Image (cartoon, rainbow, N blue to C red):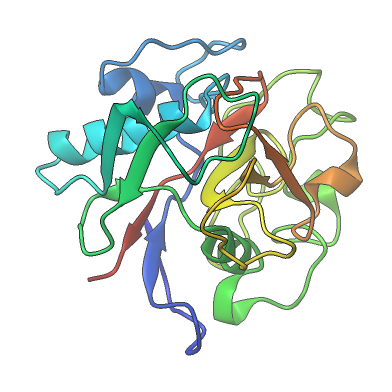
Amino acid sequence: MIPVTGNGKDLRDYFIGQYPVTQALWEAVGVENRSSFIGPDRPVESVHWYDAVEFCNRLSEMCGLEPVYQIDKTVKDPNNQSNFDDLKWLVIRKKDANGYRLPTEAEWAFAAHGGIYGSGLEFSGSSALDKVGWYNENSHRETQPVGLFAPNELGLYDMSGNVWEWCFDWLGEKSGDDPKSGHFRVLRGGSWYDVASFCRVADRRSLHPDVRIGDFGFRLSRTAL
């Protein structure tokens, strides 16, 4: 985990994973690996948002940390407005818990830009995607092992390309809005499947939280308590 100094306004200090969650880490927690492209150092993919928050809790428990999410699969989330989400589990974040969690969209974007060291580059760590990320022109149409390209200013890898990364937030009108309800959860970063423009730090995507696709993964975060 890489420490990120907050912006002194709406972002407190936090930690974020140096890489997307790999299949080796995913399997170490004892969860079935549904990834389309198998390899221990490749990012786990074909996970939906609920898979990601459950994984965060399992890893927290393994590490002796307090799980961040209270998950009730028997109650439909009243804030979930989607007509296509068949799960709608009630997921409540405990903000003072010290375990692993998904980054908020604002945290993800700030870290991808390089935090306080960022210089406004189009992609995370470079103005040229071929130096930092896997996308449709160099990926050979599949995920690739993490950490093979250059990192960004914070030492974070694969924040542009390889896999889209789930964030905790419902989709708002702009990054960092953090609405309390919605139809879609946010994804950031672009993937091996996408054209370069989708891998820009500024680009946003969202889908129903129960969707699993072969270029959806995630990255861990922790609150600096």
